[in-house]
Image (cartoon, rainbow, N blue to C red; front, side):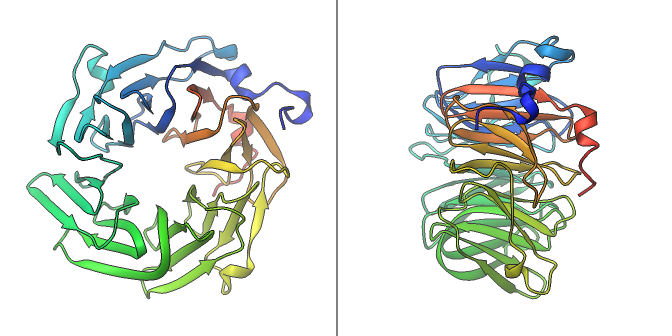
Length: 357
């Protein structure tokens, strides 16, 4: 799996910048306002990087590191208002502004001393959520709340409009309304470990410990269960138009068409037909193009339902733990468990080969 398609070198060598640090990459996110990518690191720091402006990785500014958490950084999300929000095992919820420079200290949004903030989410309306154990804290303009859950929280995700927060745990997913604080329970037996909203807010999907994927159509509450995965689908996401749902859970990316009358009959697979499990994925924000990361460090681009692929990075860098596209879709950021991180400017010629999603 190390040899790129057609004998060409991987894109990271042609149009990317690459670094290796001492700590694992926990998460990555891009600024919502055209700024850098932020990498949450296992040693508590957050590193900012921008893609190169010239071929061969030339023109890429150096890394900027901001000291954030006293222990490990556990979660990271882009803030629609600018900058990033992170949670750590020091119990602090922080706001980081890359424009402030490495010497600046992050702003402390909340200090839940003694808690491990495993999950954070930021909504379009300015709400920030963080979770530890069975508790979720909500912080925002004129709004502070604490939610107690029946089981440990395993994932948080605001809907695209920022009005609903999805909270995953055992036995289903709970929806909290920012408008009135109402809570709605979406029941489904099993242990739900990951969440993804469709861009139009019609669908909510969860990856389950039972090697299955569950998806709700929220308008009428219809639920679909997609089974047959060899492993847990922990990385999942929707295409830009909202009807295609993709996930890992095996050696290839699996996609489902939720607008089909029988979604469970629409399974398709993408990418390299090998045996190495997919560990991360990310949809392009406007095109039918997926970035897939693997347990051996490889990263490739593929189209849903196609074997065709193009390598962004070859194998050998350790399991890929984080992938994210820039908001304009012109660059991809990736990170691995072994501390490898890269930002790659994706050529327009490649993007033009993928139809609009």
